Image 1: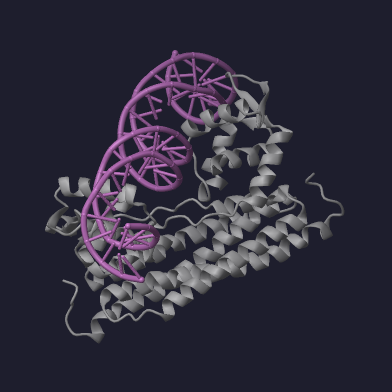
Image 2 (image 1 turned 60 degrees about the vertical axis):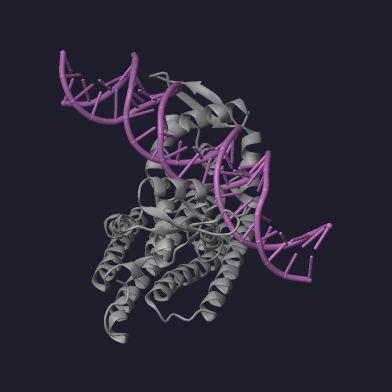
Length: 180
Length: 180
DNA sequence: ACGTACATGTAAGGAGTTACATGATTTG
DNA sequence: CAAATCATGTAACTCCTTACATGTACGT
């Protein structure tokens, strides 16, 4: 379970409250592993019950600051080294699989909008990169993940533009749309 | 719900049984949207109950051949055009986020293994490309998705090799590992 | 006859989303 | 004193995975 390890990782960087963790999931981690508070609070309770984290102190509004235990850090390192990340699902590519069902113009329009969606994402990621300054190991790891996002997003934009031009040629080669 | 539309799309290409659909999910669709028979059969029943598909006939071993209805095709086209694909989660990038917790050698080894995992995937995808011949619109759409996979995988490999070299420099700049 | 592939279903549980629910502190 | 934000929790529901369960047809 990845959420569990994301929580351990964030707490390894800095002891903090569930609410504080939530902000990370809505911020930088949102691009990689989004999570809601309704998932975070129960999971923190489970991690605490399992001895992976503990309550380091309480604050104002019934807030609880958690910290990771040595057992938790060990578990996190084990996860990092031993588990091989699985491929996820891609809603976007599933769309592409069935583009033959659309009129050529609609298919091209879909790919065009995919290119611009990815273009906006790229701008966002580049903006984050500009405003960050990787001095310590934590920030450098974050930068690595950011660069991965930028590289794959660039590849996806180039592909979408190529694919859009491809589908526009679909009708030229055989006269009349056979798909309908 | 994407599985629903994947089923509609496959049936739009060709009426077939649940078992036949399962083979697609284990084959080409496995890279994009894997599914088990335990998810497929109930979903087919729901789609039939909703009038999106219907039983076109029965065969040997109590097999049912489904076909998509006009309502189902319309629903599929609507999904294709109107829904914007959402970004998914990335277990792999979550790992990268927390690489600062590892010894530099372990982090570099992780990135090295990520590069070779992606390298094997690339070989697989290139193999599929070699053995396919996109003559009709269906095959051309499939090829588009395949090229997307190849492009992003290539980008990911280049990134992983770059990142591996990056982390190897982490220790040089500041003497002594501060992460532990 | 025996094994493999065909063929379909259900059940239990984990993971994630959306909505419901409550209350405390700070800021203007 | 009102609104925004901080802060935590539960409930219902959907989606997905793994396991349980059963039976048929075909090839050798």
